[in-house]
Image (cartoon, rainbow, N blue to C red; front, side, top):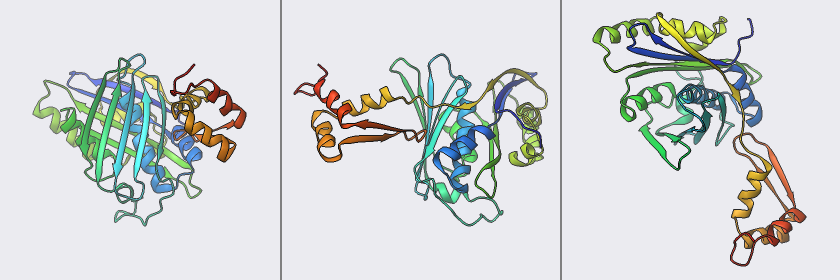
Length: 298
């Protein structure tokens, strides 16, 4: 199987009444799996969410960011993914070590891992202005849940597909997905045509395993699509030692003093990438000296 680059491709139907985006995220999801040591069910749940968030991120401008949170009552507990308009994605699951028997279709039981709960989408527009949308989880299988979210929260009839194929060594063989949406002015004929097209579609993982690119996948779901743009996708975290130091400072003088006395330092781990930042007792002492008795920076 030839190597396929991680990329998302957007397109618009020739009549302008349907738009679509498709992506390959195999490398990205492999990186998430490696960093968080996720087991197959958690890998599939995180990978599907990351693929969809990456495609949604293509709608963002400038410094805008998008955060997707899935909170369920299954053993995974929660999934959090960040994406921006430049194709940078990061994410994690609360419980990465979830193993369940296969579902009745013989597939990874992502729905059982996620359970019942809520899907939240938060768009940070960089101006202290946040868009927040939410919808109840319909199946926990992720793609179905986003289809429902788009319909009820954004009033945009959509069809969403996503898949992650996990190997026996926990690595990701293929990962990707698509979103097709009906635009204002669409007709019943557009709906019928899309339904027929999707009804005969193989699974996302089968299509990608056969070597399809993001452009190939987009053409399969939207045959007359005119390509608009493409965007490479990659894992990238925004954490840094400076950011984590700011978090420690925000805890206040008493908490920092306690860390010095009880632990002789502090170790902070970024949830999104797993990077560990060590702060020595001397580092904390410097922070402490820069905070006055009222907890304010001097």
